[in-house]
Amino acid sequence: MIRHERRQRLILGGLFFSPGDAVSLRTLRYALENTHGELHSLDSLRAELLRLADVGAVDLKDDLVRLTEVGQDAYRGRLPLPGWAEA
Image (cartoon, rainbow, N blue to C red; front, top):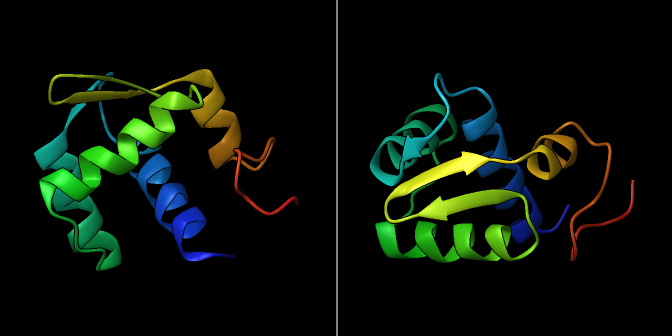
């Protein structure tokens, strides 16, 4: 698995297991750092989320992010996102 794919899967997983519908960027960053040791600045996390939003995996508005059905399917391995290795 290539690095950006791993990073995107961790982000989708963080959203998948977050309580509630939308998560703030700071809350997501905290979860990624404390659960997986993934260190992100808010700017780098926002950039990764914008890439995920471009393919329809998340909805990003201001500092709130929500996992879409496409993002759920990608996280569960039902479909690869662009740039991911085929299963």
